[in-house]
Structures are given as structure tokens and as C-alpha cells.
Length: 78
Image (cartoon, rainbow, N blue to C red):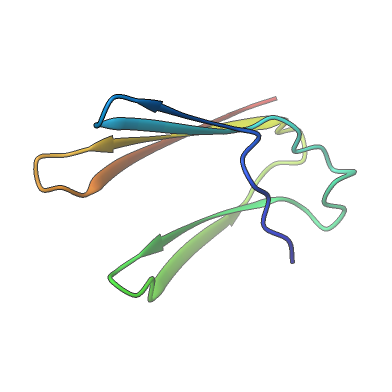
């Protein structure tokens, strides 16, 4: 198992942060590429999903909400 660092990370002020992975080709992960999100104070809940082999890049956008935690929006393209 390998965790890929984002190719780009950008902060847009104090409330928005984005990360982008630009090469998710099957050659980099012959057993498939997965996305996972951790929840809870100790990351005690992890939800994961295998991405379609056609996915080439993903962007995660984190936006601070009024409670101080993040809303996360993930979009992937092929």
C-alpha cells in the first residue's frame, strides 16, 4: 500500500485549502487506486473506495465551516 502526496497544495486565505493529484494512472498503482477519508478525533473511522482505472486526476477542496471543522469536496476526472 502506498500513500501518494498531492502534486499541488494551495491555500486560498484562511478558509479554503485544495490538494491536487495529477497522475493516477494504472501504471502507478497496478492493483488499483483508492481514495480514503478518515473521521473522528483519532481517525478511528476510515471510509475508502476504489477509483475507476480511467481516473487520471483528483482534487480535494477543504472549506472551513462555522464549527471550525472542514467540509470536503472531492472531484476526479478522466
